Image (cartoon, rainbow, N blue to C red; front, top):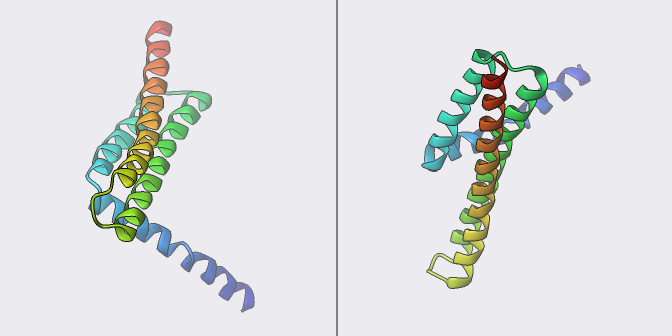
Length: 123
């Protein structure tokens, strides 16, 4: 019985994380773009019959963008909570955080282009 309670407790500990993901998807407009890109990328993994290395690059790029977006949103929400008024220093922090998302998205796009070009050249 102790193991069962332990197992149920571990499952319940994931609930806040899933609530956070749902909150981000519902409330952050850019996540809709990430969601569409994720669906397209997963489709391409199967459609292009990517090998496991190529698929891992695709998946790492997908997760990197999502993680960057989630941290960016968390930083923005914290800063808005702490200082709701306009502030030039907070704007710089938000811009830097957004730059992380941009760089991760550029990485994801580069991975997709390189993998797809290599598939086209091979065929």
